Image (cartoon, rainbow, N blue to C red; front, side, top):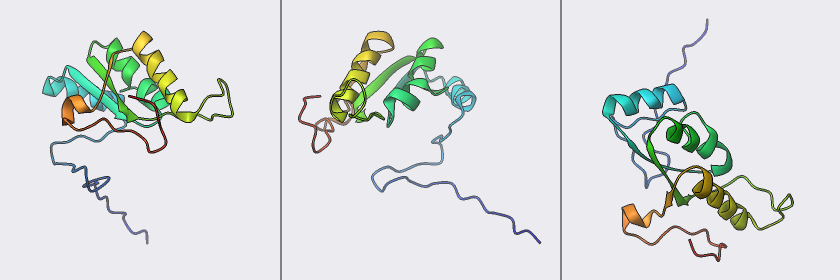
Length: 132
């Protein structure tokens, strides 16, 4: 006899971020698109890790949101990349992230800092000595 698995939706990822009943969590581009259309969402700010992969390339990522006409911004201080400094262009991880952000600003969409929304200082990784 198989026992049925129960499903429990997340209530938060970390204590600082609360997820409410009308929030949407999805990895489906179609689902995100439908929610945006249903709610009349035209302006999108994306954050996240692996900017050079998921944030830019997923079905609900920067490229596709721009392609379908959304006003999209990357919040550059709330992002990170998947980069190995032992590979080309042989720069620090933080410089690799800045290079990805520069590419996005040139070819995909504008960027912003979280301070524009939070009024707090921009986030900076402990060992990153650059200025956002």
